[in-house]
Length: 388
Image (cartoon, rainbow, N blue to C red; front, side, top):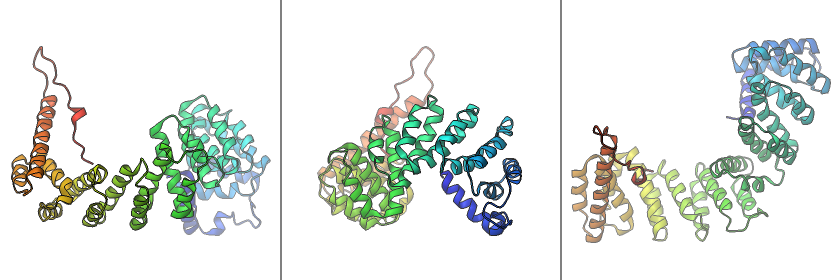
């Protein structure tokens, strides 16, 4: 959970527990506590052990922040750095300061010990990105310490996404680490979906000016959109997947939707897959979805597949069942395969069972200690069956 969401939750709970008047300082005007009291509250917040108490103590000190108060409160935090003071109070303070003067906040942070800087940079970058995303990104890229830059990158994307400033997708597309790019792209897509809804999000993704229509990063974002939309609106996600059939990322969209759908309505998901155009994408999605259902609810899955063993449109699920069953009960798997009326499908299932048995034997051999003077058998890692 992000700092911003933690802070909001903490503030709401603190208000209920301590009363709105306490959070306002109970001293009349906005920011009514004087600077000396604010500094005392910093020390008390740093010493407190619970997030609710920390938040309730610190909020009145952060009201009516201005450059003079920010510098004085920074000094109050610095007096506790020897005890490794940081955590939520420091992050709330940094984010409050950075909202109105990120440059001064940055200069002060750069004078802090490295372990404190690592806690402060994400809060600074998140708040800065809401004000000037490109300036925050430029400053982040200048950080020489990867340990500081890595967590702050997630904060940059969070703040940038919340700001609606242009350039977010272009910036993400240039990240060299593919896994990190997909992770942060998924976060940004989910955030946009929460704030604006599915249709504005999809129009935005289709209109990214820096990317060609077939760009792989656009496909990554659409896959993330399918997953995010499917959590709340399966029919809308299904319509999106069906509209993307001509795009390169369609097989993965199909798989992602099927795996999400199988969690709430496995028969419905498989029937929907059956209605999709026949081919490798549909079969792959059906195989992954059925295996997941078989793991989570084997009794229902086995009853369902037994009733459809002769249906050619469910061939991928039938073969997947035979293979998955053979890993635990090879004799039952072979008995199941023998019941398949179609000879071609029966042969495919038998081949899947044989392949699983060979893999199991190699896995068993790889787990045994080598004999004296002998070499350990090769690992079957490259042949591990897909259990998605």
